Image (cartoon, rainbow, N blue to C red; front, top):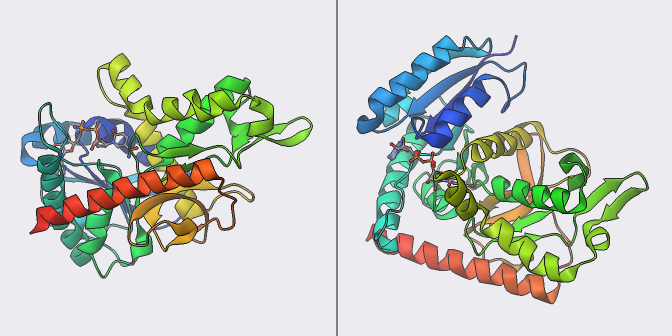
Length: 331
Ligand code: NAX
């Protein structure tokens, strides 16, 4: 069989971690024929809970799971990992200033960047989930200069999947028949969920979502705000933030990156901007991408109408501000 792949999950004792590690151990992330060794990192106050997760992983007797490292030592956690899913971070608490939260996460991501750079396997692929996801990924990139920029990404696949879900509910079609929505920009409420190029597979062939929905007011209004505000709606309903959908989408992100996107389909990933679509270079920005042989590339040449242009720029501006705030925390 195949050699095991080492997958790091930081913040593994948390909510998303608890949903994510069994998915990885079942082959949802890397395939049903790919053995894995899980590396789980958390901080000392969560060490006992982390050990409990390790006990449950043992108890579940996953055939693909060839080993579990559960640790609060970042070097041990990062050593030899091929894939790093960064879920651990400092959450925003009631009454905290944005700058204070940013400052905490900048120091976490700076330290973990160095550990990954020194100890991860060559060509390690990194997915940042923890918020502010795009900016944490940017800090990680800055402080791990020997890891290629293309190997550092952030999660906007949950937003992408939420957009697919909303279209499928609205049209009463199977979600697997909807494709090529786009999430542009920041994983925040300024993100732009764009359906201008999205299609639905119908018995009569592929049809544009715009033609099938035929309700611009909904597409320009409620659809966009529902996707942007879905995280808050889940918190309101569950009294906890999204976890199973975040974990599942993180698996989708890595699976498509490693194993490739289906022909004719793109997905959304937060990646290092090269200036495509006049998005400022040097931001981690969510674009439509296709993946092949373990590499993503931004889908080029899509038409951007005036309304979309404004929304692409607005979310880029927010990311530039976050970047400036993050850098101000470094000095
Ligand atoms: P939890 O608070 O349940 O878990 C976070 C875990 O991280 C905790 O166990 C904590 O001890 C650990 N942690 C804190 N600092 C750490 C460090 N320096 N090293 C390692 N571990 C550390 O949060 P959870 O609900 O699991 O969410 C995790 C992160 O995902 C949050 O930042 C959250 O905002 C973010 N999300 C991002 C999403 C996305 O689509 N990009 C969606 C879901 C989620 O909101």
